[in-house]
Length: 93
Image 1 (spheres, rainbow, N blue to C red):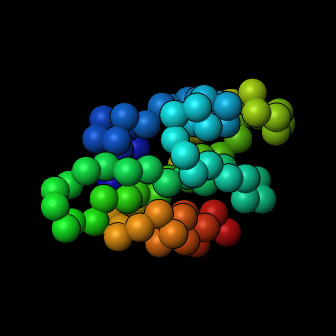
Image 2: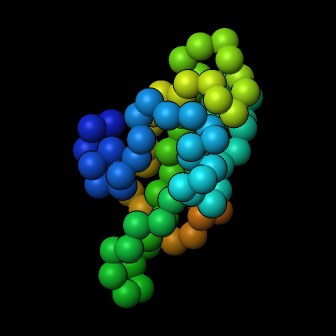
């Protein structure tokens, strides 16, 4: 999924800060030099609804107010947030 499509579909901010992500989404973590997150997007009953995203720092400021850019978003939704974060971790290496 392109960054622009993901921003529209999931309403992802770009650029943003970790502080902003943490106030909007429940699963946000630092992973090396990346910030990973999972989100929920309702697709209907009994359909996968979780997606993963990776953000990267756009400056040397690694505090919660450092500017982040959206790097990747999963092409598919997952059955739970654990699989979504595992996807994001695999992309952050």
